[in-house]
Length: 330
Image 1 (cartoon, helix red, strand yellow):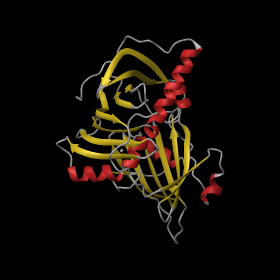
Image 2 (cartoon, rainbow, N blue to C red):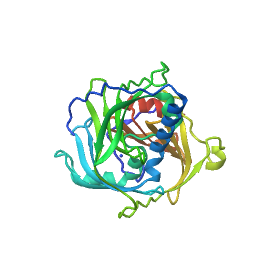
Image 3 (cartoon, rainbow, N blue to C red):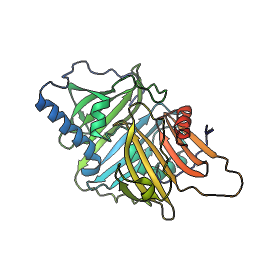
Image 4 (spheres, one colour):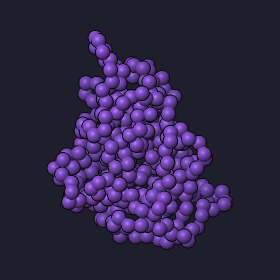
């Protein structure tokens, strides 16, 4: 087994409302029984999935993460150019207990991860429809001046278990029906307590004034059917333990200027679990593992070396669950 040392944080350039009780609306429309309504629902899901990369916009957003101590609350400027480019920029740190300088640096260094995997986002329409129950709520919501549709989204329970994860949380999602852009999402636990929330305070559609983020990484997407060893030039790790309903969703070859990594993203349609590793390096003598971990709210980041393989893993797992996941790769 891989032993993880909690509390170690190494910043990397990749891999990021009141705290009360929230009650879901009870006036439900449901999902409809006709084929036309099913087709319409699918079209909306695909629009929501595509929006972060295909809609040009600029706005300000407040983010609150209540699962962390102290609570993390801040405002940020958010932008997308409609061609895959994006920008995230902290405007104000609201939480009194945070080290403002360190927080701003961490947010800047991990903005690529936050954009891709942070918060609520549909990563795969098929997995989303298969693994989540959607209730369309009749009450319309206005967010940042935009009339939105609201969905209550909860995980399906098929009884299958791969890792001992109990995540009864559900989401309330408010999105612009015209663009599919999610303008507010709330994550709520089984007791009705708000876990986290992000809400646009202002939004303007069209070409943004902000310069887009320039990543230091060069990424080449790979087919899920590709010969990964041939593409990477080294043996690719394949974890044997995954959270319930998670499957490989994306694979890519990543260059950081000098080194080549394989990035694998596993998902159930919404939640994501990231695994990156590069070619093993060989040294004479001991091959003991050296790996550290940071538990950040309900997410865990691990990075280090296992059996001479340098890796980074991140996901909404506890420290023990992440240990099982990393160990299952070897």
